[in-house]
Length: 314
Image (cartoon, rainbow, N blue to C red; front, side):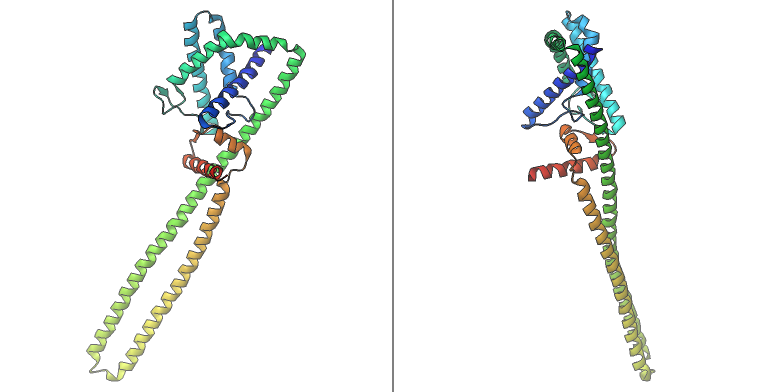
């Protein structure tokens, strides 16, 4: 078990080095790759110890060693990707764009690459790793393993907390986006209603005026004495309609103003949510550029675009 744990930590560190080097070559900058914050990629450590445990006895048969490595590493990557997605509701990597993939968790190209990598590890690298492990005094080795184990446990707890924070932030972004859309739609509907109401009021007023004009024309000869009264009634009707229209306009304006204030408040809250300041959250988003949320896909895309925009400004 002593050798087992040393193999795990050393290959987890070497795997992190491989990931960082690959990211540097493809992006031209340092990216702290991996699920955890520290310089370890546990999946590489687990992959190495599993291959060494089961396949090292077959190291003289390169074909069996290669095929076994492809199968074991592919199963490990498939199970790890599936479990992480179910636990944290995030797809951490996605091979869907590659041919011969299974659910985007694994693909033929990378499975073959893992197979060749395991050939290199078992045949060439591992003897040197064992030599270095044996150079470490046993007591010192135990102390170092205990320290690294504690650091790894703390890192796992911190990472889980960070992922929980990201999921909470994504949920809040989706909720705010829904509220903003609802308020915007309501403002748009109110504008349309006002146009229709204005058209209806104009039509009603025209009808009332036409009715009074017809009534006045019919009764003019018989009711000349009442013409002034009818004119006053017509004036009162116009004033009443104007007053009601002014009251309705003030009510709508107050309602629109309240909705605009609410919309501005929602937009400020959205900007605050999209401003990713936590180191752990920024690191995870950079480390897994193809990570996507199974529950909040649009929110994660919006968050990533905001983070990229802020980086470009700097």
